[in-house]
Length: 277
Image (cartoon, rainbow, N blue to C red; front, side, top):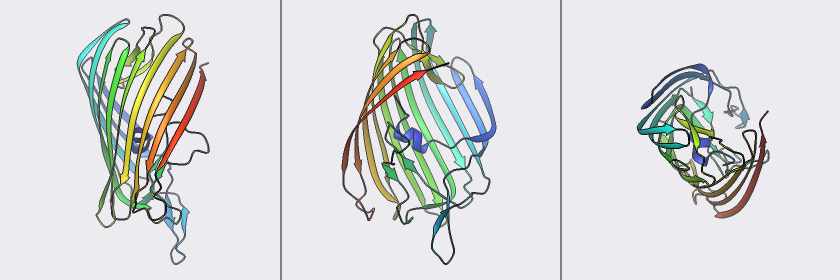
């Protein structure tokens, strides 16, 4: 796919400077990290004027951990069968900053507008977060050229009045390599990487269904979005590849959003040519 799913991109924890501890074997992968987070898009309110402006945030830290278990692990050349179950947690000390969630379609450009955004034009839905935390759950299965994956994400904000707002997303995907190869599994990160090339010209088809829900809270209401994506990839060799995605996106702004609750249905095409040096 050209991009990660809506939920993975929007609700995964931020990254920054820190350290990570990794333990792995054929059955388990365990990651633990503590980071000072990078600068994000944060806001402050100018007293008396009521204006909302971009502002530097104070330094704060995050903690995240992920554990994956592989009850089935067999990998010899192009023959493999892997079943993996993963669980992750993260916590961010947001220090009362105003935070913003933005979810994009799965084919983006520099001018792509978020399909869901917790900030409105007058800033009424900015989130002042004392802390932010979330979790994820995933199941992945690969047998030779076939691969399937399910991921569930949530991200919660505890605001200054102790209200907890939780955003939710999931995606499910299937892929099949028509020419008989498979993807290489990386035990260090518990993830699948590049195609295991045994010859040139590898063809792959894939399908993904993703969903994200921002419709929570009394005033933080922004609706839901659904994406269905069909993908075709052509890997000429290890360095050159072509990809095309067709995305059917349905956006359902909340009736409580107060400014725009028109259901939108979009047809999006995205392409990529990738050359590695």
